[in-house]
Image: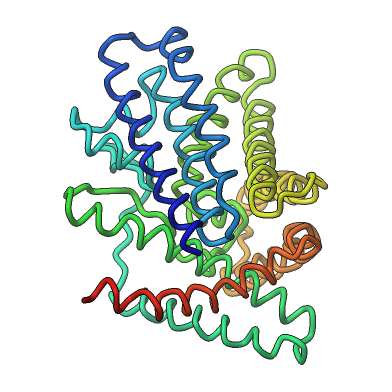
Length: 341
């Protein structure tokens, strides 16, 4: 564990150094192709750095932050777009926004402000602890129950990690950021789930890097309907491929493309739902949220069990992650007194 933490610290020191280079290179090289060329070594480093980590709980967030979020933000930055283009001329703000799962709040944003009670985060943490404890009895649980626990674990784990990583920087730097999650269990449709509630940091980046460019390039010869459909499917496809890459970092096994198909299925079904809702609304029909909400959750549970988790389970990533909790507890028990005294 000590070696893993040492590698983790080295990776983030390297990351900060790389982002300092990115910040200063922007004042020398104007936006466009040549700035993109100047950042290619950084893209390469961000892709290989997480390979130095073997643990799930350090490797997975690092891969998400660097390989996906930071790389996509810097790609947008090469053309003076995206969250880094909105950041103040302050190197600390630049590094924080580039390296962390946060998007600064734009003056004009379509994402509503989400006010959450303080007890909600604590209750989610408590539920996550209960889920982890339930794994001690996994031999007595039905496989479907385990899949449901994994789904809740993924949601709570990602939301809590993103919130806890961002909170100190928001407090210290005074950054106002867009919401990271918006209670996805309250979704009333797939469009609502993926577009307005689930992992809004990633959704925002995908919208800027994939959806809008594909839509703009295709609307001239495909029309609005075809361009919108192509943009939706392209966005979900890129998300699937990025998840496939993240799976490689945590499993170190060749891809089986199941998670890519998971997102392709989600994209197709989301687009079909969008079209169906428009047709139904024209006739004055609308499915009540009390009906559509459970249907969305049931669909997500079915498809995650079918395509999202099997690749991880087959490679033992779930067992590895569960065992790491005990390792982390033992590590802090043995090292915390050293830091206190």
